[in-house]
Length: 78
Image 1 (tube, rainbow, N blue to C red):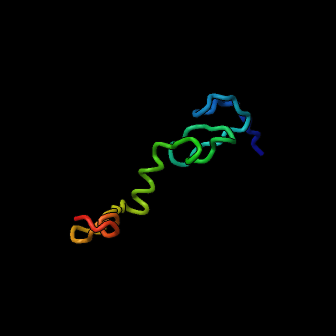
Image 2 (tube, rainbow, N blue to C red; image 1 turned 30 degrees about the vertical axis):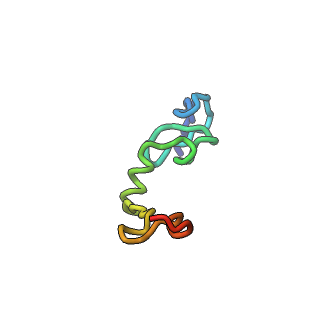
Image 3 (cartoon, one colour; image 1 turned 60 degrees about the horizontal axis):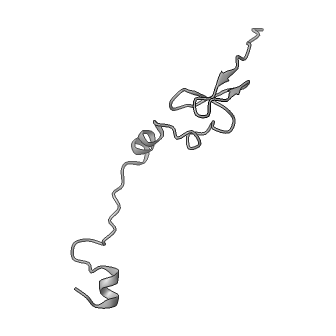
């Protein structure tokens, strides 16, 4: 049986010393319990991982080139 000694590390986000650091699966940096999730420490690699996994989806807000704007439909202005 191998005894492993846990070393205290500084959280890469807030700088607090933590006895049980969590290492991010994406950026591999150490974090405290509060900042262990990628969303909580604003992981720089999270947006890259999401883009690869789900693809970049463009949002069309105007409904297309031939569709009239919501306000123009209501107020009748062209």
